[in-house]
Image (tube, rainbow, N blue to C red; front, side):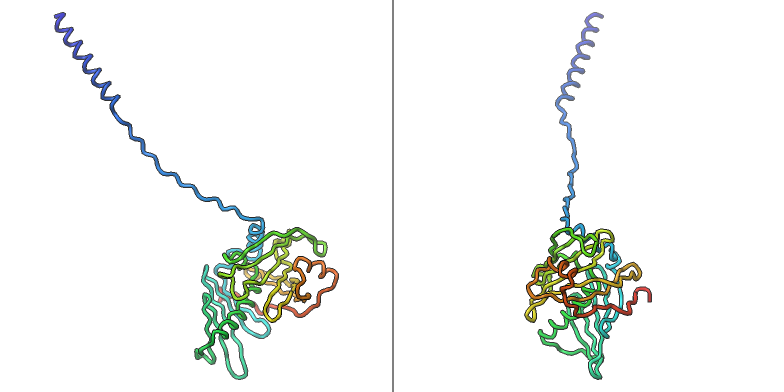
Length: 267
């Protein structure tokens, strides 16, 4: 009996030792999921201000905006669909009805509903003409384009109101025909809207302009403004124009009036 008990005890010890050895020899596999980190985009002070300004003037409503308006007796339309756009300019020349269309940077023209062939020069002129009018009418919408370079300049006071000044230049790629133009925007720190702007250009011997906004109105969520257009001497630094404006040293040239504005998305 003692021998049987000894055998049973011996076998039990062998079994326990065997189990422990197997457990020690097991390899534990730990599966880890790859971690992904979202890159942090740091916006400059200028870009933050421009984003706030775009929001104040209409924000995301610009992305699907479809409006008609008249400017100096000519009818315009713009239709945005995300990054796609269609601009239309309709006018008369003598007895002809002319329609210029700029769709995603492709310019075409019809005269009395018939397509006409255009030279590269005519395409460039037509593109610039329709682009410039709608660019100013929809400010500051296009100021977040990839071709835009923005720099914070300073804070200042114009006519007892505080402003932030932003300088804007454009890359040659995607910056359009007048990519070497330079702009300044003075943003009202309370409303975040553009009350003043200025630009210098090089075509036709160059020029310097300063604009003061008036008659702002919000039409279905988007702000439209008219401007008094002033002239300064060629070469005048844009940064100096507010001081010259307050001193009455700028010459008034014209009024930039956007009239008969209609939201075509409602029709």
